[in-house]
Image (cartoon, rainbow, N blue to C red):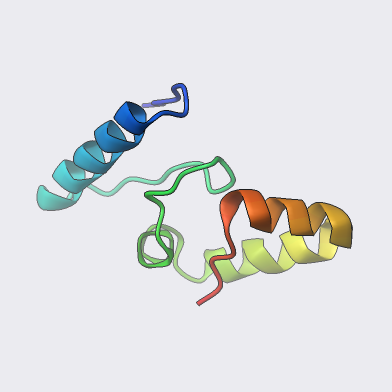
Length: 81
């Protein structure tokens, strides 16, 4: 199920509620890791992707030019744990 929407306070609240309910019922789910998403904490990302998270972050750092990498981190946050 894809739940894209307009970036807004109501959308963030909905995602937080929806994710909490999925977690409450132990329903595994993942989200696109590079979309702007303030509800995607480092803990949730690690739970969703496990060791693949580190592989993805390393690949992103290797592939992106430093100036682009800086913009990505500013937009999405750095999630290394």
